[in-house]
Image 1 (cartoon, helix red, strand yellow):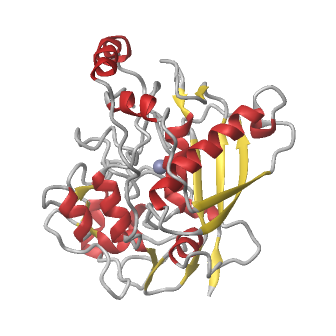
Image 2 (spheres, protein in one colour; image 1 turned 90 degrees about the vertical axis):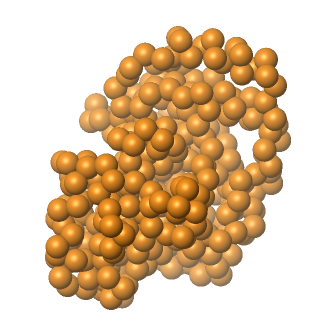
Image 3 (cartoon, helix red, strand yellow; image 1 turned 180 degrees about the vertical axis):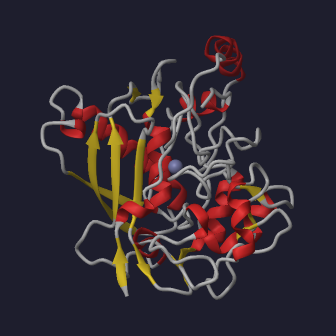
Length: 336
Ligand SMILES: [Zn+2]
C-alpha cells in the first residue's frame, strides 16, 4: 500500500448568495462553544506571508483556530490531535481555498482519509506517522471577513475553513472525470475510492461503484447529468433528507475539485448549506446541517452531533430580516 498525494484530495469551495441562517450564527457565537475533544495543530509553511503576514497574519491564524474549534465541537465525542500543513497564495484563479488528507491506495476498496481514521480511532491510528495528517491551502487574493462581522463584499473565512476541514475529514470522493479514480483506474476495473464514494448512486438508487470497488461503466454519464443524477444514498443522510437520496453536485460540465464531492449547488434546498461547492460574499452559515450530519454518520462518524443550540432573540431576527434586503443582491459564486 502507498499513500497517495494530498493534492488529489484537495477540494475547492466556490462563491454563493446570502442566507438568513447567517443571523443565527452571528449571535450564536457569543455563547461559549462546547469544549471540543478534537484539537488542531496548524503548521504554517509560508514565512512572512499569508497566515504569517506581519499585519494580519495573527488575525488569520485566530480565525482558522476558531473555525477549527467550531467544527471540533460537533466531534466532541472523539479525541484526537489533528496536524495540518498550511500554505497560501494570492492568485485570481476562481478558487478560495482547498484542503485534504492523504489516503491509502488499495484497489477494490473504500478508504478513510488519514484524518478520518485518526478521529475514528481516537488518535490510536496515525496512517502517515509523523507527517501532517492533512493540508490546507488558502487563496488570499480575495477579500476575507475573518470575524463574525463579514462585510457584504468579503468572503466568510470561518465558513470556508470549516468547509475545507470537513473535506479532510472525508467529506469528499475520489471520482474524477470519466469515472476514473485518483490513480487513473478506469471504470470496469477495481479502483481505490473514498468512504464517501461508497454511498453514491444514480437517480434510481443504483450504486456507481459496486461493493468490489468497480465503477460501473454504464454510470459514467450520470457524473455530468445535472441535478439529481448523482445521489448520496447513505441511510442516515436519507433519513435526514425526508427519505430521499441527497443530490450531489454533478453539473453538466465536469468541474475538477467540485463535481461528485459536494452537495448540489443547483438544488435550492442545498445551495446554501455548508458543503455546497460554491459560496458568495457576506456572512454565511457555519453550522453543519442535519443532512450533512447524516452524511458524516454514514461515512463513519456515528458519534457526531450538533453542539447545544443557542436561542436567538426575536429582536435579532427582525434586525437581520431588515439586513437581508441589503445583502440580497446576486453575487458571483466562487468554488471552495
Ligand atoms: Zn469544497
